[in-house]
Length: 82
Image (cartoon, rainbow, N blue to C red; front, side):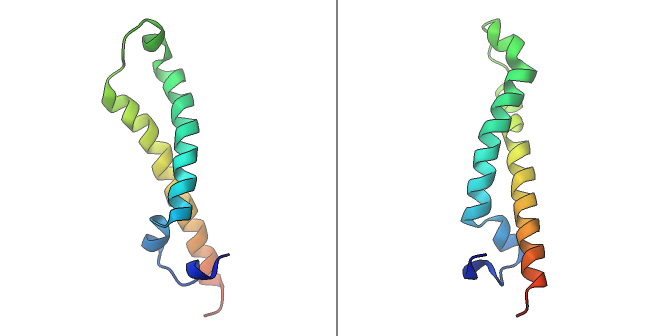
């Protein structure tokens, strides 16, 4: 683990570059798959689904991934001696 992450709070880890980048990548992959699964029939019919549904489809995996990454990093950090 990088030394700059050792004594950060959960909130700092939640918004750190590593958590954000990982969450963004996962969101792009999972959000795209979920959009195809959930809204594919509308898209194939030539209709654009409501924008709020598409945004939420990408935001949910982003939030889950961000939280999971930060939580794991925080747990690892709290087990290391000061």
